[in-house]
Image (tube, rainbow, N blue to C red):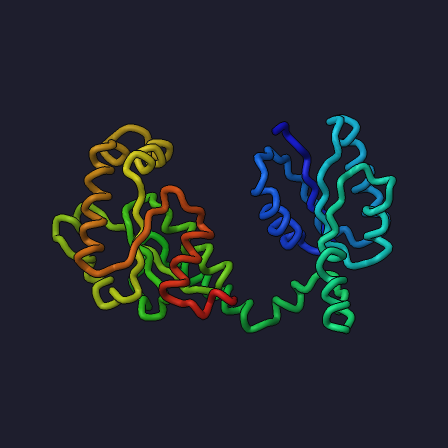
Length: 274
């Protein structure tokens, strides 16, 4: 399919609009050009966005797709009128109004809730988890590992860092990560700092060819990115995880979201409702 401009318009951060919109767009072979317009909380700002949408529609010869999460009726009306040349998908009207009818109550109709969220216990837990994950990234520190809820292990560049940060940011999980290196394989056992926390360990592995490609992009040439070395490291890491009884999965064809959900299902199923 050809390129298509997709707008995410919100009176808040736009995270809801973009997350939900991307989930829908993923069902189609669409090459989307994302246009994010957060904090559209006045009629004047709404008119400016409509003008932008109409300009792009004229230039591209097709309607932009527009996902909106706008609470204020006056602001929303500007985007939903016929004068807007986009295909507008109103998430609040699609979901909130039917729920109001079903539940027999009106929704709060509040513009954004992040100032309220920032004062919540869960928010502060997430901040603490992010700080913890940053401090325990790539084996930087072995201090306070007893506070970790999960310790990701695996060879360098298999996806441990982004997964740790996603677990912290999205689910408030204190996640450390530790690289398995050739010296560990020579000893044939987990690093001493990890041994007492084996039950918290979860392993990531990766296809050696993909690993060699990733390492070559980061550090071209040399032994680190050599395919035979990648094959050896992956083979030894998987063998060690099997010996130690550590659950593991391959990150080769999985998104961070899929990896994180699998880990949570294994170690903290209660956090799946976070």
